[in-house]
Image 1 (tube, rainbow, N blue to C red):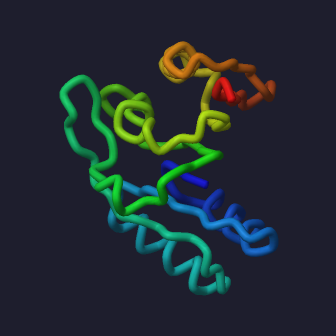
Image 2 (image 1 turned 90 degrees about the vertical axis):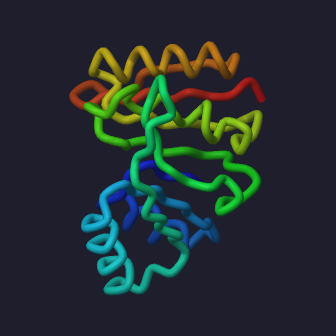
Length: 150
């Protein structure tokens, strides 16, 4: 599982993952926040989260985490995308151009903040580029569920 952006979700995913055997890879651009989350992971004994501090890098048309893909597993089947922050140039779009080759054909991407126009546009674009399907879930705080073609 890949998580873009860290926080309470990192702790929850890690705790659940320890019960079911998941490894969670988390990207975080803010060094201070990454250390805060690492502290919480240690405090609660969550050992299956690989939190990588990855400052944002300018890729031209968008900014995305500066990560060497070889630092990550070969494939992800689930992505929780709640970062980088919405005001980042290009928003969260960089997932596909930078790490798309690491997503399984049947990937499920959960994109937070799908009620915001920029995130909704990214969800539409990812859906088209993956050749998959999308549904919007939730009412008060909607998120997009994007599924690869299989």
